[in-house]
Length: 87
Image (cartoon, rainbow, N blue to C red; front, side, top):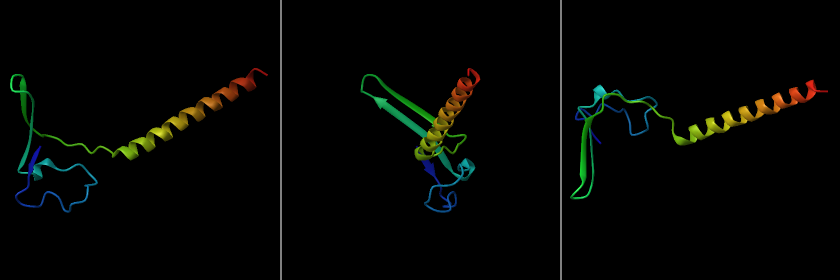
């Protein structure tokens, strides 16, 4: 990927941005992908038109663990209710 910011104003620092970048702030936002061998190669050119902020993997794992714990807790409560109703 190639990003060009000749004005040096697209990012305010070298820290990860808290929101998705505004692509209009970048002069060049092209994607070049190529691969394969000499006989069967491929080449893809593109231009980024939108950006989405994706949580880093640690946050995703944390939310997944909490979600699984809530599902397990729900099943335990439901199981206890069913066993009390049968007595």
